[in-house]
Image 1 (cartoon, rainbow, N blue to C red):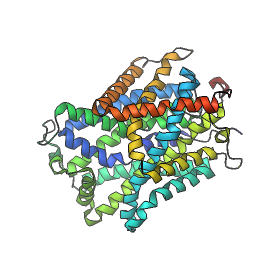
Image 2 (cartoon, one colour):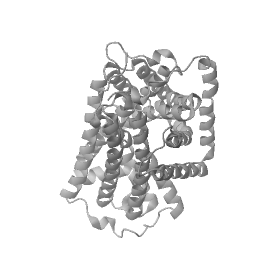
Image 3 (tube, one colour):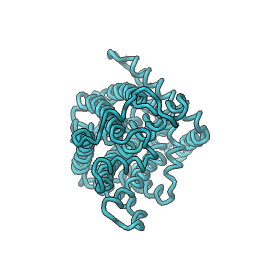
Image 4 (spheres, one colour):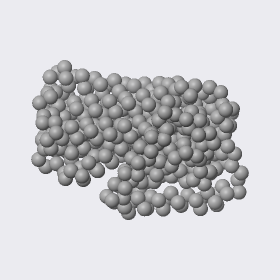
Length: 441
């Protein structure tokens, strides 16, 4: 039984925007603005990161056209560097990164569920688990259903954020005077280079997740047309949303009054909606987080499915459900590991360990453009991959300079996947998915 191409442009676009725009959109702009101390610097960092991300999205578009298969980075690394490196990426995704991100987002959503529905604080312990289980059921019982819910949630999220921006302007709570002077840094901002470095890293991870759409390429109709549109339009839309929302935040709450990330959300909500501001903003934050989590829980299991189809992972995870046509076992694996991480409460440490390695794999995936059997002949090549690789290098250097120990521990965790591969899968004969030319749209 093979996967069907039942996702269109809207679903792929929703994965790009859904993964990028999550909890960070309400917290990151405040922290960045406070450290940079200048609205113009904040806009420059967002635009710079948007340009770098667009270069990466263009590269991933080409990879998705060449290899329109389920699995994303795993497929690209397998084609460019072989099964060993591809397995290490899959190991990192399955054992550490995807469960850690899912657990972190579920925990991040819990306080806003409490605020919105007035639940007892004692229920906060079970809310993240219920969210993860609910999304697992949704992805288990049907790609069509999960796709519709995920797409609706993420399109609604974009609409709500744009409405927030419009309401801030129409209600006259936003004033351009709060942005002035645009270039002058406010008292209390961090030293210039430290502020730029910190804001750049924060912006990179605020955009993070756009690449997840590559993992569903094997289920997207007409990938030659839809994948490039999803990547490029998605990144441009995310950049525009971050710029508009950040500007609105600062026009409502001046830089000088920003105390902390969480307090800033309350300040913004109260300024726009009065005493009901807390609940309104809680609903907005919750929608953003759930949209991102839905996109993640749809895309992540496709990596384990692709590995198992290749013979590089346990065979049961490469099977589709006979009735629902979903990678049901892979969905159960991803959810079980996320719940395990949740029980141990280790997701913050896990994510700090794995960030450096994740950026390395992201860059390596783009370098496969230089290793293709047929040279890439596009107007943007090789400029776009070089810009993106330079950006990834700078990000990782900043991570190493800030705190090298977690990065090195993360590399060790990733390399531990090699003995796992040798012990369990070295004797199996890897098979590969059909060549691109054999796949019909």
